[in-house]
Amino acid sequence: MLWDQDSGPGGAVRARWNDKGLQLSSLAWCASLTPDEQAACWLFEGHPTAHGWDVTDPIKEALARELTKEHPHLFPEYNEGEEGWGGV
Image (cartoon, rainbow, N blue to C red):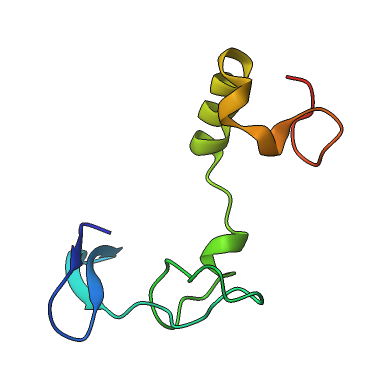
C-alpha cells in the first residue's frame, strides 16, 4: 500500500507489479471482520490469501520479540505461561 484514500468510497492506492512493470491501482478495503467483530481485514477487497489478522509479518514479530526482552511490560500478551514467546 502506498497511501490510504481518506475521501470517496474508501480504499488505498497500491503498487502492483506484473511482467510489464508497475501499475498503481485504487483498491477498496476488504469488508470482512474477525469473528468477534473487533478488527477489520487490512487487505484489499478480493485478496487471494487469508485475511489480514491471519497474516504474520516476520519483521514485526522479530522486532516485538527483541523489544519484549527489554520492555516486557509493553508486551503482556507474551508473558511466560501464555501463548506467545513465553519467557524471552
